[in-house]
Image 1 (cartoon, rainbow, N blue to C red):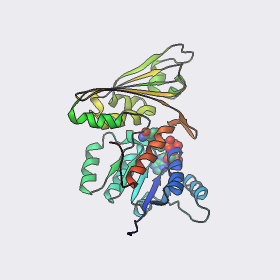
Image 2: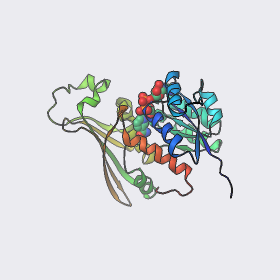
Image 3: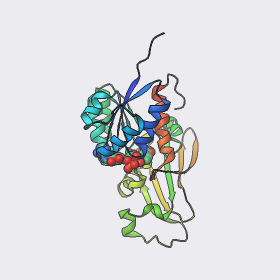
Image 4: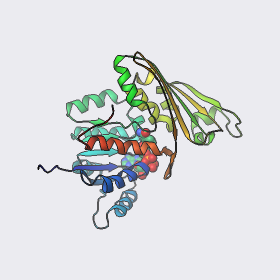
Length: 275
Ligand SMILES: NC(=O)c1ccc[n+]([C@@H]2O[C@H](COP(=O)([O-])OP(=O)(O)OC[C@H]3O[C@@H](n4cnc5c(N)ncnc54)[C@H](O)[C@@H]3O)[C@@H](O)[C@H]2O)c1
């Protein structure tokens, strides 16, 4: 029988998502993949993750360039501001890339498609904290008229959001308050917390301008709730996802991390399930 080569995976960003993925790769994917490198702008985070995974081997590296050299798949799990530069470098080196900071790619998408095609490689964007991307992709082939995302979060979740703090007073809020209604493109600009959900939805369907977003502060909710309405020639689709927050980073939904793990599974498995 042919022995399969393990996919070498490097992780950029060793926070909530990067750490969870690293642990998953080291334990549950060890038959088909191997961690080749970890890199974080805060070197101590990569070092401590490396120590927690492997007692005797050092995985952390001092530069992004070395990580790219050592890896067949680069997972970006760092920050929106860094995502394009990391992806551009990895794609130019003909590496596969999984991008978590989707919002950071808006504005670079045409270039991304060009570069990935020129270098004959693949770039993966997990669905993240929402459901319905599979149906949206399929429906879009026949034609989608409308995509509307309604996000409800506790007022707490908006503290520190400049756009909200300038326009609203949320302390003591007793009922739902619509904070924003407009294009995904504008939502990405004003709501850094919602950036990935709005961006993946725009990317999978009718684009950042036609995809509409409503953001509501709701004192009655404790989870981050995303509802998506899709009207298309093939079907009318409605999904609702009530997200439990990641224990290490309350800004990140647990499902977003699991979605990255599921994407990795798709990459590694010979049989792919779902759209
Ligand atoms: N696609 C999705 O559904 C989804 C969901 C949640 C979060 N995200 C995004 O994924 C990214 C990671 O999320 P997280 O919860 O793990 O965040 P986190 O803050 O827990 O970890 C991010 C890590 O990246 C490091 N970092 C920052 N800039 C870097 C750079 N230029 N180079 C290398 N390392 C850098 C930080 O030091 C930190 O350790 C964020 O951009 C976040 O917005 C995506």
